[in-house]
Image (cartoon, rainbow, N blue to C red; front, top):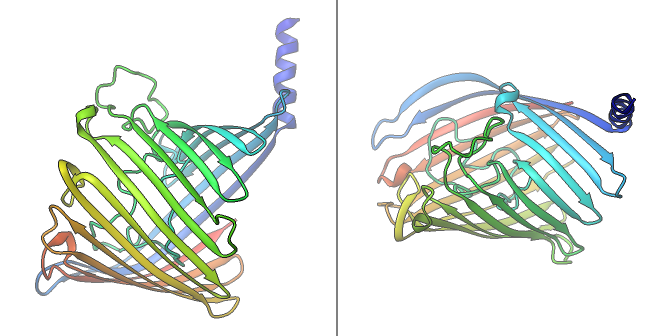
Length: 329
């Protein structure tokens, strides 16, 4: 009888929960060059696809809290799901255990219409990255608190190498190192303003003596149909194109840009990024130009990249262009 009652309660709980399903598919057609100091080789035109399905649910608990669950399958099956976890929310505060949910150290202040430079360079292989040491895509736990001025967050990853579903074995020596991130993003009560602040400390190899830090400072402002923004990421105890541990060394990733909404359908954007610091012989520079068209249910973007001194090598240049069609449903 007890088992039957328990089963009935679980079934009723599931039946009363709210469940949503969303999905997207991106189709890309583009061409890029392999950067070279002279006569870059064109990689040819390629067609690619990205897709994802997200299942999310929420349930009011007896103690007044709201339980939220999410699993996002991206370009693969459940074993490699990009986003997953649970959230317990009471009022303006949420406690999160998951992966790619508490992304307090992965906010972008620079406006973009399509991909950011580090995500959409179509084979150029640039080194620049605004969030290279983030821990939001590791299995972690943390707290997020929302206020009228913005959102404060803390995220802790006991093992930064732990990212999958089957990472419950603490003896797995390959999954070492820990990370802690704190951050803020919000308007500070000013209409049109957006501020991004965060710091992440992450062990380079599981040893406290090889800790690296990533400090992000950025801001954007919207006035009418124009948005401008700038962001700087400083990496301490870091050097070179692999962002490897190097005591006393540092690197800076700077980016700024603007977008303008020409009308309800057409938007234009520009972004510039630069990477310099220890282990970089000459500053890597990337310029991105984007045009977007909203079809109502689907978005088409055309993005051009011009990269110079890729990997910090002088005159190691290349160009890329990409047409992207994204539909969400």
